[in-house]
Image (cartoon, rainbow, N blue to C red; front, side, top):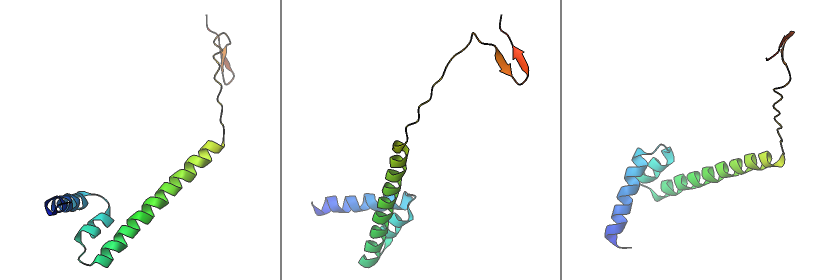
Amino acid sequence: MTNEKASSVAAIWTEFAAKGSLPGMAHVSTARCIAVRIFWICIGVIVTFGAAYHLYTIIWMYMQYNYYTSISNDFDQPLEVGAIMFIYI
């Protein structure tokens, strides 16, 4: 990668991080110390994997149960609402 491409990627990243809604990305782009950048990158990766794991467990629990719904249309039967019976003509 040439130096010109690297600087344009860094400029795009800085602009994206400044306008993004993730606070960690802004910290990564504005940090002066490499240790702080590594810290915020690790936090971002850990949080991303945690969210992915949580989504996986939710989908797994949903797929464990089979729900079947049957719908019947008995329009030839009178409609009962409380004690009143409606008969269609």
